[in-house]
Image (cartoon, rainbow, N blue to C red):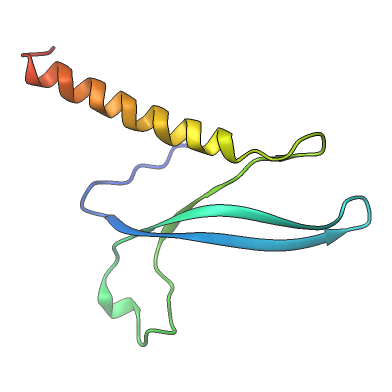
Length: 96
């Protein structure tokens, strides 16, 4: 799956999402995600309680052996940032 988000759509509104689950094998667990909201037309929202905006949620991986892997998410976001800084540096010296 590929998702394209254009800069004009990105908002600096980010929140942590939690989803508690229960199953017989693991009992009660809480899954965590980081949600980034996208801009959408105001006409879609009739009231502040009617929040049906588009968003992207990055869920924290969970494994039976290790539980939550928050470090994985940190690594992915750091890698994205470093790749962008690398591209910016190439552009500033005449780049490609």
